[in-house]
Image (cartoon, rainbow, N blue to C red; front, side, top):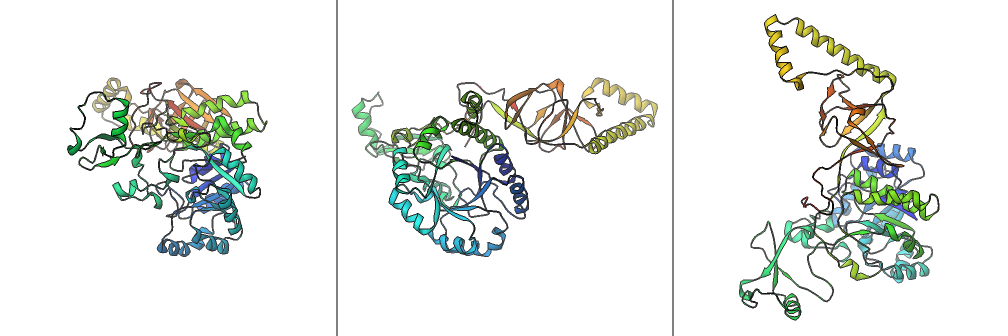
Length: 499
């Protein structure tokens, strides 16, 4: 099965490819249902073209899955020449009005039907095939049994199904709650994830005297839940009430569990699934890399490229990324999809940074020469001071050693790498290195230093605003992720981390 992974920006696209995706899907400008993802713009197509050259066997899909208004179609037409710069292998659409436009202007790109179209039966798949669609991303409400029936009836149409990620409580993701509460339409890519907010539940004043407040019997509780008299109130919107109705097998306006099918890939393959899809264009590099890697190893084990024993540690690492409780969705039993959870997600780790290219000998020499020159200038500055002033400066440095400027020295056997800091990290913190084929390796605080590559000064800590390189005896590949353990994490307890 093909592994299709999310890429919300150019950096995530590179990590998706490097960590094992066969295909990555992106959004362009305003035509994606994830407009809050960075998406792709300006001249980034040049970098995408270079990535495709580096990974010639990998594919690139473009999600144009919004519901198009007339002005949206005109805007798309106005940007045609720009979109043609991208090496797109397929467009993912839900709006049939885009079929002729894509076929005429992108004759070499395939048409894929978005899951937003809610295609869930063999006759619909057959119809979309006649319209020119090569692949259908089935509606998430489709069971494995139904997928097998669809594939048997349409052997020439590729079937793609979501295997991992956040699920929307609304039917096929077509939710109006975000638009109603915030004015941000989910169908135009602006979903505010309103279902995951915090709500209080209670009775309106006119019904508050119906129950004494004592513990209700099952029949009383059922009657109340089905009465339509219960109200929801969002914490930050006091006074705005929404009726909550408990149906036979659902409760409205609640947060669904995350989908996770990594233990059931064989069942998906046996059902006729051609490609599995990971949700998450708005997720972090850490999420994209580790989830992609876990599913890559699981698929490789399924295809006997590696042993299950080799794959298992990587599969288990899937739960080291922020996630909610998991479910198998509609695949086995629709009751599993009705299970809900709290809206927060959590992880025992924080992404500290990423490793880039190793400095060449010439680049490294320049860094240490800069350090040597800066140290000489500092000594010269001190020597030129009035003796009394110099004495005061030196006393102050003894009292406050953190003010001492430390300059990098070349160490035999050490290597210098580009380092992009993503969170504040103190020098001396134990780091963990993550790469496509290395589960994790500890880098003790005594085995590295952070250096400002522009002036050669040693850094006591780094954050995203710092120019930084990491100097270590460890051999590290470009694209390695660096994480640290979150000291506030408590196993078994999901912390509230906001919306």
